[in-house]
Amino acid sequence: MKVSISLLLLTATLTLTACGFHMRGHNSMQVKLAFDSVYLRSAGDSPFIIDLRKALALNKVTVTDSAEEATITLDIISEATDKQILSLSAAGKVTEYDLRYRITMSAYDKQLVYWLPVADVALNRTMTYDDTQVLAKEQEQAVLYKDMRTDAVAQVLRRLSRAKPPKDQGE
Image (cartoon, rainbow, N blue to C red; front, side, top):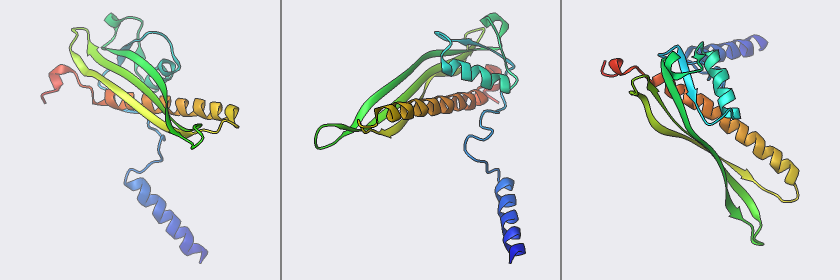
């Protein structure tokens, strides 16, 4: 009996790995990019920019100090968070919030030819709220924003993996 269960588990594991299955978030920061250096143009070093720099370094992309030294410029036009009331109780108290995180970006080369047009990466999460647990809900909100930031970095990298030099786009 033990042998058949072990054999079943081994077969299931091999089947899942053979089809390319991997757990969400596992190895999602490693992608193949068509460039080896990038200049990050942004308003400042936000946590998102710091995480993006780390992810680019993980993918062996050099983040340069000027656009002239880089293959492309990744312009992080804006980064915004927002919190909207999603639902209220019968007494008029907030019971749910919709948390939103948005990055607006584009990528272009030294000749100002766009590799990626201006686009948004928009994420949202729903958070229940209870005003008797204010501190816990503030911590939950911080964790949800951090999770969205991590997802945004992964999405930016996936979009950059599809960015091609203009001469290769027609091929």
